[in-house]
Amino acid sequence: MMTTIDRLLAQRLERAEGATNAAYVEARAQVEPGVGATWTEVAGAYAMFDGVGSPLTQTFGVGMFGRFGPAEFDAVEVFFESRRAATQHELAAHAAAETTQLLPSRGYVPIEQSVVLIRETAAALPGSASGISVRRIREHESEHWARVSAAGWKSEGDGLSAFVEQMGRMIAAARGAHCFLAELAGEPIAAAALSLASNVALLAGASTVPTARGRGAQRALLDARLRFAAAHGANLAMVVTAPDSGSQRNAERAGFRVAYQRTKWERNPFRA
Image (tube, rainbow, N blue to C red; front, side):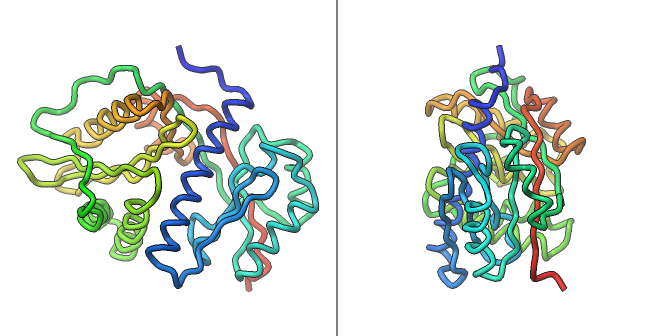
């Protein structure tokens, strides 16, 4: 039976994603030291800088772990604005009401919604597609994995593909991250990753090359990652999608269910 969603579970999930993204930021600092990537903790929330405009430049866990009032907002805003970055907070539905109520008066506006979905790792999936094999990448294959991951976004434009490849290098280098390839007849056709934190497997990085779509590669990768996570002590898997999106529907077909929603708030004193 699926775990009941309560504040304690929401804290665990928020901490898992916060820790995962902090590890990505640490990897960025190693891979691209010129970015100045760093992170800090304020009242249990993680504030992360991965460069101006990076999707990782934001907070996780605000209002979830301790009192987060004006002084805490001040500290986080100085952290971002001293680096010429907008301040963005990804607030879970379980965040303290007294924290959420402060946002409009401090100049924040909601800019994005997301949905957190979870499922148990041990539950069986339908059989994977015939002929597709899945394996974890070897240490020297991080560049290869990043290129395969980026190839799945070629049809969306070269700019996005290049961004995904850059992010892929960072994910592959991050503490707690595990990268997988799906292969057909010895050729890589899809990539995906997971990160383990707080006994939660955060699934990300799913991508299939356009010519191999519809063959079950992502289902095979999901099956392999769930089995890997269960074998390494994680009893829950977590994904984050846009609300009412194809990604959410795909996750629900794979046994995930909605845990809660989140709202991203932004304060941007640098907008022209």
